[in-house]
Amino acid sequence: MPTTMPDVANHSSATTEGVLDWVGMSHIELPLMFSVAGEAPRQVSAKVEAFVNLKDPKAKGIHMSRLYLLLDQLSTESSLSFASLSQLLNEFISSHEDLSTHAFVKFDFELHLRRKALITEKQGWKAYPVTITGQLKEGKLGVEMKVNVPYSSTCPCSAALARQLIQEAFVAKFAGHQQVSAELVKDWLGTTQGIVATPHSQRSIAEIKVQLNNKVADFPVIALIDAIEDALQTPVQAAVKRADEQEFARLNGQNLMFCEDAARRLKHALNQLSEFDDFWLRVNHYESLHAHDAVAVTVKGVSNGYHA
Ligand SMILES: Nc1nc2c(ncn2[C@@H]2O[C@H](COP(=O)(O)OP(=O)(O)OP(=O)(O)O)[C@@H](O)[C@H]2O)c(=O)[nH]1
Image (cartoon, rainbow, N blue to C red; front, side):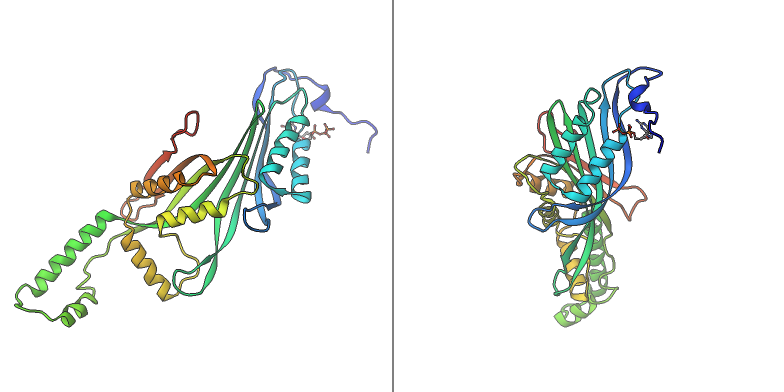
């Protein structure tokens, strides 16, 4: 290695001067331990974005290696928790004395959770996309957790239209009868001529962002996912035997949902959770009736908080 190497970031000036809002790296590959509330830390495989601002208009650039090595240290010596995230952002700034006053980091990964079947004793894995974002600006720390939860939504309008067709089929079949036996009707209901129409349902995704406060040590991601799934009642399943599938059919029938219904259920559930200062949510119903989707967005409604 030559004794001295050119150091462009330190010793040359910007050809065109100007401050920059964010400079850094995206798509950094980083396995790390993720501190989940109520459980031992889990290894996850994250893609990371790391940024600082460049407040010196003349400086050539930031020191990317310093951000990268701080992330590497987090990966190899620590785990991602509220405290380590806060420390990381402070170190992003302290490693860029005179250059930066703001720091931003975003971790994207999948969190695999064991999920129980609805009726049987079976279990299986479900992978939930999770994003943890931290920002430190003028000494003010913001930590956000985002999770995507897939579920099934059955259209209430389609269900009502299907019921009407079933009633019409019943009249067409039995109108001429003075009396019909319960056994005969039961058998007829068990045929496709009896249940002549079925409502459509769709795989749907609830995207939820919450702002965490420093009362949180580890990330309450499982509590958040559980609250979302409890509110919706029809989460996409992992292990499924026929008894579980039948229960899923019942739950879909008893929880008919437009996207508005799903969004209101989630808003109500999130308002009950005290650990989140603010939330933003978007539900996407990937329609099977249309090629386009039904979407609803709402926020908690905190002043200076999330906008829809
Ligand atoms: N600032 C900046 N650096 C870049 C960019 N693309 C690649 N790099 C490289 O990032 C590398 C690391 O930069 P520094 O962190 O300044 O590396 P260093 O000078 O060895 O580290 P220090 O001694 O800590 O300053 C350099 O080799 C740059 O060439 C870019 O667009 N901007």
